[in-house]
Image 1 (cartoon, rainbow, N blue to C red):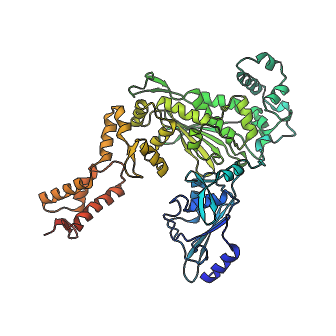
Image 2 (image 1 turned 180 degrees about the horizontal axis):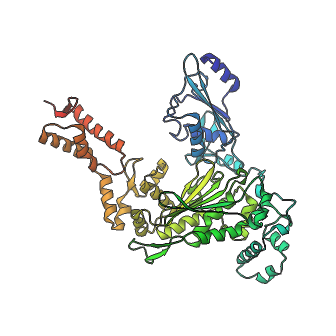
Length: 554
């Protein structure tokens, strides 16, 4: 299409701007895709999705729809779609589509992002905030609009609650029922043992919500079904694959576990090589050695994977055990809460689940935390051991939880030992900083106000306030290297070098300065920093470059 034909086509499809449609110039997506909050692509996508879905047209003039074109930078449509799903919490992937048009006469590119409506009771976040369009601007979502979304009627088709007409009590494993009964008793601390023992299996299963008015459901089969009864779940499956891998990621052992899951959990837990870990962190108040994982840490991620698996995808649940190292748990389906950080730091449990009937039944037999705080407790357990925080990969259509069974970073462990007053939210953010992971500007400002970090965003490093109490030489040395020196110091070094030797190649100056620059800088940032120093000396007419050497100006 020519530019004029494309403009007519867009005017027919998107005749006006409203809460479901926006026209934006955004001549380059380099800084507009995920840039200034409330004025970038992800903010508009989140706002439109949190209403009724709609469209964002990029590369056209606001109000007039005149085509100006956009530079999509290094984004192709697939990469941009995946990043939208990653950056916009709760954004449905189904229905999300980017159309690209390039005019044949002027070679101008226009993107149309088709945005699906949010899922029930799940508003879409960008920059960890909710947005809505009011007139021609984005603002943070009003409380009334947020409340309207959160109280929407749920028309959930709960896969786990569906009745299986042909299944009977004979399809259930008596051993699994016995274990479930004992776990159910634990909820009442022994006060109702006699009463519960008097119930028939049918009564017990109804009371524990393992059946639905005595009918066998998919939940019943998953938790209590005989292994040969798994055909009732077809075409879905409920199987767990366990892998044992060595240091170079080679499989050393492999097994598959099937229903009943209440027994499979115990079998996998006893199979994992929970070896002894010896502490080297002084002042940890731990014994010299202890098991790498406690019972809760072993079972909670796996129970979560079973409870929140998207069984419609026909995928296995995977447990990968790395020898004397770490555990990874993978299940299919998007991570439903806003973020892992929100789950860990909020004082209230998540209220929306993919498989409500399955989750309720698992609570009643103590497979998942009754108060909904299992993930938060998992982080607390790691903190108590001074181990790294659990890592969650929630990109794409799966969730991977990785648990370390050792002190991965002695420096960070020393910080936890010496700063016992740090909140869990503080530890999460400091963990990211220590690992060199990106945090938002708001999070950086929060840490800076508390005096926990120094440096210019995004190149942050742990502050003296955090490092000093550790009395750890390595941390203090790293702090001094990160704090580094001012530009005048580096310029003086360069001038003294050339004064001594008459001239210097760029590699000589690199060798002179590199090891004195902050540790957090990348190789590219180091190179650019030295270039800036030399340019400043050149502008002041102190040095000149002859094509090979840096010399004093005559």
